Image (spheres, rainbow, N blue to C red):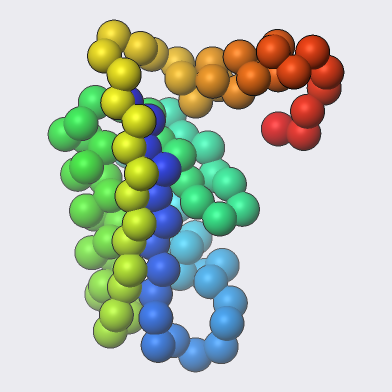
Length: 102
């Protein structure tokens, strides 16, 4: 399955999120799961238990530093499919029959 998720701290100082998100991304990177960082979310691919454990770990890490945290999760679960982070993008590019910014 592929999961798009975002972890947002609320009530911090200023508007920058780079520093708190860098901490979360270290957890994602250390998980060993395939992932892609996007400008507004992170996409992770793997089996249910490791992916959900990672998201829980990310949420809790953010909660240690901030009073309020919102985590948004979107799941695309397709049985037997692997390599979908890149495969889905390649499929759209192929069907568009032109270069796209990816």
